[in-house]
Length: 446
Ligand code: 5AD
Ligand code: SF4
Image (cartoon, rainbow, N blue to C red; front, side):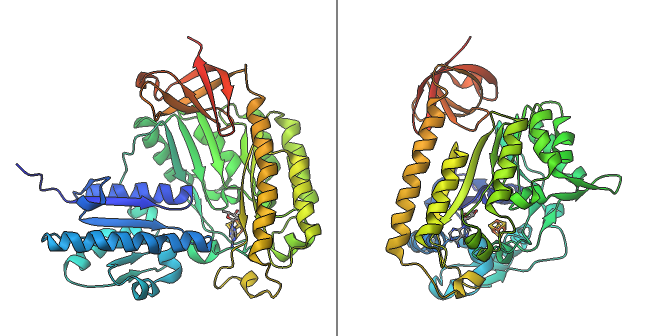
């Protein structure tokens, strides 16, 4: 007997927020009676959840669409249909422009309207072509999403979306819209469901997560530190994290939460973007180098072992060698456990794209290489400082090799151990034997 159920395939590009949204889209499709497939050739609907943050990310979508179209054509020859959906930030930013370059696309849906997927799919099945829904609707999409049942010991939960900061290089305020915080009760409810389906760790997500200011049940405004406190009361939650933060919203309550809140992990991703005040001003970052350093100092005073991560851009328009050296100096001062660094990418519609002093790509590449070498040295030194030490590890996935599972240390390092799947979802003390540049290996202290 053949399985009559329709199948969906989702591929997620870009940030963790997209990973979360892809999960919610999967929930929708399952509610609609579809089943997931990891094989695109089997899929009745393919959803690409796209990223627009840098040109490279956006271009990836078009090369992927070329591949998807070939599969769609092959399926059609075999008498089977396939709907192609472009979701996410490229959908939002480019809208119907997408079908000019990729006419095989059926549905274009933005990050704030994907709860309408069933309706859009029905319209496509009804014969409508090139359906575009990139509104920023009044209704809250979260209220219209079905309850999910994704199972993982480590889960994401979006608590805040959008951004009002308008860094001059960044498309996020245009693709994700203005800042919006979900109400506390809705977040608590979702967290309880995640725990009931096996989550032990929850990472609160937001483009500007520490600007969180959701409504508490009593009508008061709740900031992130208080939200973390509330979520920490849920039985079964062992670990809490949050990302991504902005230095201007790093308030004292949140800093001291890293001292007072035992479930809050000693790790913070705090982008600084550039180490020169002149460039920071041109980026409209709303903080100076000294402000950033003061936050780091304060964090380390309350939580000396906190691991720090950051985002850095090289080659912003007008960046001189001296400005770049200031970035290297800031990295040298802070010492990061981990970091993401990028060549500035000019994005349509952003103020920085109109600046005249664009930096040649060769200069950007050279700076990036120098910076990444420095960051790598720091990351290796950080990881090596754990050799011989014992760390509590939450195991959340199977290893690539049989007989191996992988978890995370409090400092977000991947830790590989030779154990079986029965330890998934548990926290065990692991003695670190080998410290590599990107991960640790150890043995469980039984
Ligand atoms: N060019 C390069 N990097 C960018 N980022 C955001 N916009 C751009 C851009 N136009 C980086 C920032 C941000 C991270 C998510 O991506 O460092 O923190
Ligand atoms: Fe982009 Fe972050 Fe700036 Fe918002 S705060 S505009 S997301 S870099």
